[in-house]
Length: 329
Image (cartoon, rainbow, N blue to C red; front, side, top):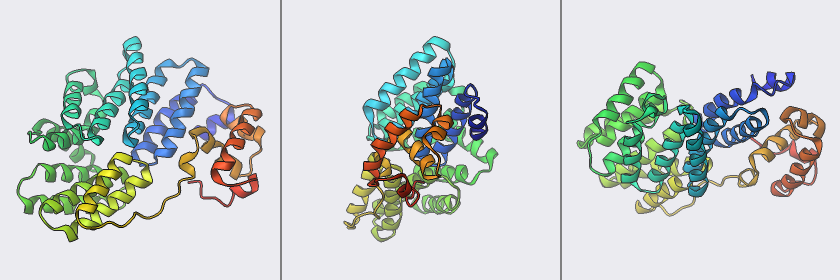
């Protein structure tokens, strides 16, 4: 749909398309793509006067900042999304913002703050949004860390996950049950079921969260040898996703098992690009001219040229022809 809107020059529809596309990319673990989509969508909302779409995109960007541990950026974007809710009472952006702030707390080990924030969100209009289902596992993890029960969030997620029948959701449900289970044999069975269901489910963020939780529990049960592959898989996925606080947590756990090796190498060049630079170099790599790229992204050719000028040194290339040989996915 986004491609059709670009071809037709239908700039007015793109922000709504971007709202949905950014969320889909986020859920599928394509965090870099989700950021690029949301940033472009946010720019277009300003140009087309669609302020109501902006709050949703700001909330999505706040969530991505939370995963990366970018506290100031997360707080700023969440505050902007909240301000828009105060002005228009459209709650979907607020739901993202509240989830983002809680996820930031959770990633930083502030479990009481994360739980308080999510519990408070469930007393207001956010409870009617799909995010209230999706953040239930975060409520459960925070509660477990504090030694508290989590019956309501477990029921909320269990009811939805069972009805959905989606492998990734059922995997997360097994993870939640394992976290809450004191009996190791039953918890182990749930973790094994979760890992099996995650395979091929297309949700690397959730799969890494499960591997981390499983590895942590195995280490506590003094099975360091079995913990290592799960913790390593979690670490490498978090590194690839740019989820720095979570990667550090997995690395700390892995070292506690006696493994002091390094993760598989990952490409740093793309992470140095801004979201708009990434969009532009991808189009340039396909052979589009500056004018054609500008038409696609509703930018002037001069602006496209400026972004390519900034992007080339970051990618260690000197010409457009060299872009075709890079992995820009």
